[in-house]
Image 1: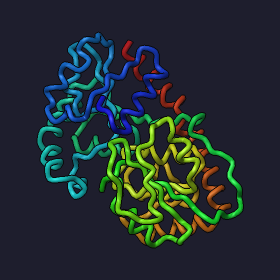
Image 2: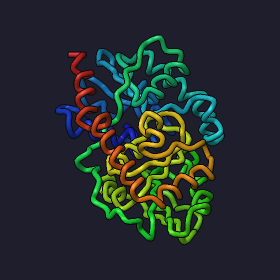
Image 3: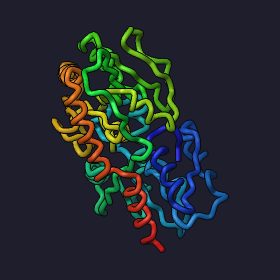
Image 4: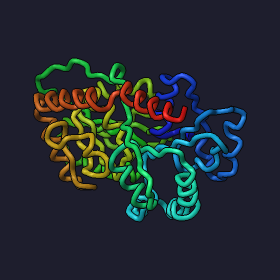
Length: 322
C-alpha cells in the first residue's frame, strides 16, 4: 500500500482491528517504476491479499484470493482537466492497463461509495458486481467538544487535504476574499506536504498535522470547507461530521452520500466561489444553525460511518474465502 493518501489511513485502521491483517507500506515514488513493486511483501505468505486496484497486478500471488478496494477513480475523461499532462498520459496508458488487469484477476471488488462503485463499473465495462463498504471513522477519537452557543467574534473555517486542484485548493483564497472580516481559513499542508498558499492575514497554514492530532484540529474549527473536484468517499468530510462540524462541500461525486444538503451543511456548485462564500457567511453568523447541523452530522456518522461497522463488513467479506 502506497503511503500518503486516505486509502493508507483506512487500511491502517483495518490493521489495528483485524487479527492477522498486515499493511506493507511503500513510498509512492516507487510507482514511477512499477516493476520495483514486485518484491514488496514477497517474503510474506498471505492467505488473502487486500489492496487498491492501481498496482494490485504486481502484488497478486497465484492461488491467493485478491480483494480490491476502489477508494477513488480518476482515469475517466472528466478528470483530465484536473490532472497534469504527465498524469493524463500515465492514466490513459499504463495505469489504466494495470487497473484493468487487476480487476480481471480479482476475487472480489469493493468500493467506498455507491458513486465510486458505479463509476468504476461503467468506465471499466465490468460485468461483475462491486460491493460497497463505506469507510469508517473512529467516533471515540473524532468526537465533538462542547462549545458556547453565543456567536463567536471570530470564526475558524478549516480546509484539510493535499493542496491540489483536485481538492479545490485554488479556490481557497477567492472564497476567503468574499468572507466576512471575522472569518479565517485554516488549512493543512496535507499528507504529501506543501510550501503553502499565497500569503493573506486570514489564511493560516497549520502545517502538516499528524493523523493522531487531527481530532483536535477539527474540534478547534467551526466549519469544514471542502471545495473538492471529486471524492471516492470523502474521509475528511466524515471526520469533520464525527466532530460535530457543519460541512460546506462541492455537490459532486460521493459527497451527497455523506452531506445532507440543508441539514448537515451545504452542497455548492463546483468552483462556485460565491455560493461557497455565501453559505459560509450564513453559518458563521448563526451559532445555533452550526450546532444543529453539527449534531445532525454526528448522528449520521454514528448510524452509517463508524469504524466498527466498516471493520465488521470487511471481516465478513474476508471470511467468505475460508
